[in-house]
Amino acid sequence: MTPADEKFMPIASEEYIQAQFLYDNYIWEGWIPVEYRRTGVSINNDEELCEYLNAIYEQLNPVNLPVWQKEQDSFWAGKERADVTKSFFDCLAKGGWQCVNCALPTNPNWARRVQDLKEFGYTLATDTKRYCQRCKSKKTHIILLPIERGGIEGNGYETWSPALRKRIVRVLKGIDVYEDRLNQHSLPDHKFSEVRWGKSTKAENPNDMTDEEIRYKFQLLSNQRNQQKREACRTCYQTGRRGTIYGIPFFYKGTCMWDESIPKIGKDAAAGCVGCAWYDIEEWRRQIIRKLEGL
Image 1 (cartoon, rainbow, N blue to C red):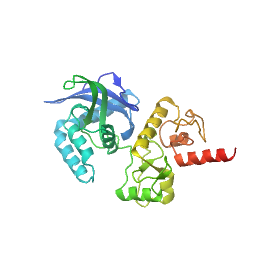
Image 2: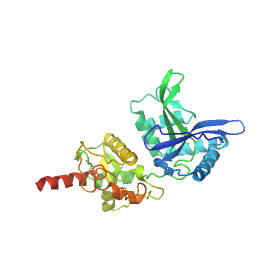
Image 3: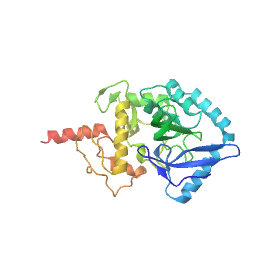
Image 4: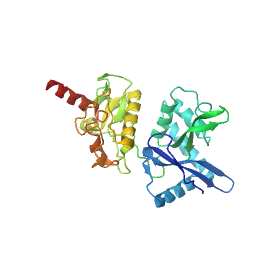
């Protein structure tokens, strides 16, 4: 096992280390995420890195591949209406770097499909400037690590059952909180962005959650707005500058900058999100209206 010292950060909030793993008759080469919020990975020192890479090394051993593939077959068999995302998985599961331009299925929204795979707990790495022999130019490439879904340290992202998803939409009356109108295509969104989740942030979402718990935890957004929110939250995490909607610099609590007295990661970090437009769009709108009525 020969990890390189150089680290890469080709996309926001993800950091990788280049590695070469040597087995009896096989060499695995690729990037290993060492900062990967989706599965709760955040390596802070050499001791953690060594332990983490050793665990990855064991899981990437080719002798484990048949069992891993069988587990994935069972997983996808239980996924309804996931044919498009499954086609991306099948391509990436072949192993190695896959060019999004010529190797992945043709799709105008390939980034959404990759995001879906991450939300399913798969660990991927992205190189935005890898030379493609077929394209004869530098293109974005994706590599899938055939390791346990949720990552070595356990999935840091929450899931919910189809029944709960429908109930969340019903409790929130199908109202897209960004547009403030009914939108049948809007889906549940965690108010507290996962980019700031820690190892203990994940919680169960039982079908019998109370209506109050649902309203406290979720809002409805379209895929487009959900992506927009992710980028705003990533920028905030990286730079400390909180996001805005329509460029309106209004924060009903705090300022345009992240409060440095509040932890950046973990459950307590949610306190630093309060007041930001993206965290709770309905409350943000309500506070603006109160200000306007007071003028």
